[in-house]
Length: 237
Ligand code: OAD
Image (cartoon, rainbow, N blue to C red; front, side):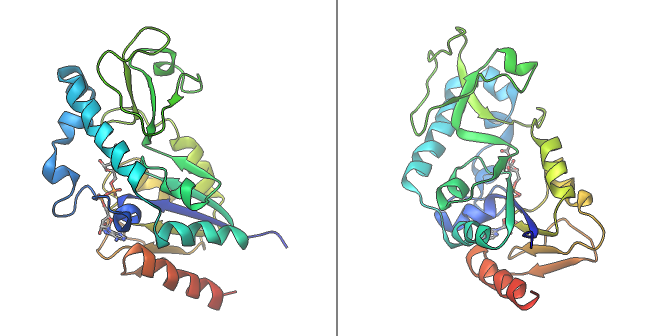
């Protein structure tokens, strides 16, 4: 029998138990930094080194971090389910936990691209470089001679992978949302593409911005929440 399709949408909360801040909780990134300074094209044009240093710091933290139980359990579900992970996170912890199909909506912190290049007009152009955990500074240039910038989707920029994400969500037999407040569109609207009759689970210690009568809310952190979710799946098979 074909495996059921499980689609998992994740946000910063899935990486919290790996030591990363979320964005909107107390002491989150947006308490310490103004998103306008580090996640907008205006901030970039104002002070490139400040922006590069912010992402240099995230890359350094990521090098020393490990996937947590939540990431591992999502990866383990590939044994019994056809799993797609759609993540708003720019870290690579899903991949390092063993998930094989991961779509990044907001870019990847381990990648860079030219600040001015063909990618600006055509997202399929392969101008994106994997730099792993290396730092990038003002003066580090792409082969086309322009400054390297983080391969991150900043506020006000298009989300190149959103259509792929919609197609994936439309095919879900089970939809799971982990660790996102659902405050940022278009990612926050993806659940609207879930077909009728498909169950929606949310794992988050707090309320999230989603009103749908299908939602089963598991009010836990990602690790324990994933254990409970897997028990629910086992009991419903
Ligand atoms: P938020 O900070 O908005 O939401 C994080 C969610 O994780 C909240 O609902 C928390 O309750 C929950 N949470 C906290 N600890 C958790 C844990 N241990 N386990 C499970 N859940 C936990 O972060 P996102 O929704 O991911 O974009 O934010 C979306 C986007 O806004 C980000 O991708 C980022 C940001 O601006 C860019 O920077 C482009």
